[in-house]
Length: 98
Image (tube, rainbow, N blue to C red):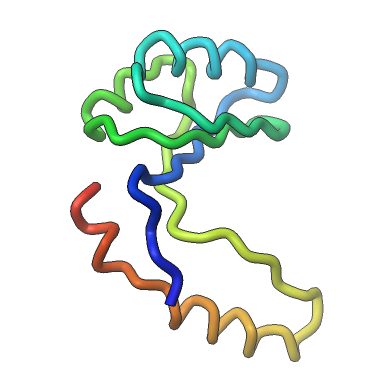
């Protein structure tokens, strides 16, 4: 089973090109935020702060808690791997962050 890390991993979406603006806002408003990764229109970070504090981010369009990350092949036969992976995710540890 996949375990959730101590600090949950968040995905904040933002208008493409404004990732650095959102990252700067996160650094200023979320004191314990770390492990930044950016992709086009996305900023990934970890934080143990309350969801209420995270919702103060003004430049984020959406904010998600990432339960797990994995890749899936492009063919129908790969759906079995997707099913097995999702079934193996332990959601109980996530409840304390919601």
